[in-house]
Image (tube, rainbow, N blue to C red; front, top):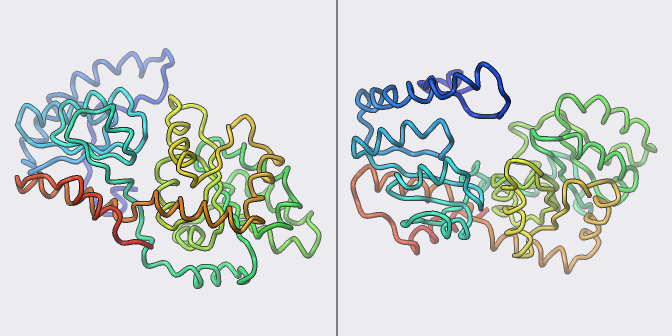
Length: 336
């Protein structure tokens, strides 16, 4: 995708560590890591960057080490509440750390600035126009359900178990993924005629995802930092089902949204049709829905991308870093 977009990219020989299985590629990984350190050093000597921005994955380690040797300042951004081992290692080499959640700063060296999660521009989205695009009547409630790329089957089964009652309560925009789309169409056709138009499955929503987010009165999804950031930038209540693996990062993310009142959290193993219907009951309680929406908006940082950019530019220009108050103002700005 990156080369296809016309963006130059150079790959290290190091590969991302996605499995811990015993295999030939895994056995070669230490060699790949060793080769990547001089490769990273050569790359930085050739490019001579004024600053480096990283999200701290394992593949960034050789670059961070090379940058430290060459005295090139590194800005690290971490989106999860609990940073992983690679992030913690790189954090010690970085000049500044930017994070989505304030609690993360307690686990990282200083300076650490709370920027929020950089997201697509949602400030220009018109909610009424977005609802019109999806043909959602003014007096109807709308629920957006998407499970991300991980374990979408859990979401598919929950929606299947909740239909047709779910469609009676709200118009359902359901992003199924390609594999589950045919089954969703079959379930849609099995609904009574009056409800059929209220269940709207889509294999994917790319450019239209902004409108779907803006049109929804409730968003049901995983607890990745981007999902939380986009919903809270719009002030939309959430139902979060944390992905149970990946070292429990999403459970910690979800806890932050839940503790502030912006989200209802359902454990992955408990997420079924009954649990989904119980969560959607918030739409029938205007006061609670309004309170959750206010909490969501208070948590949101729609100007996060601008805040991160300001930090990187200050590093590159060798200017003093912005203060916590400056970053707070920038990240809270550009409200949708």
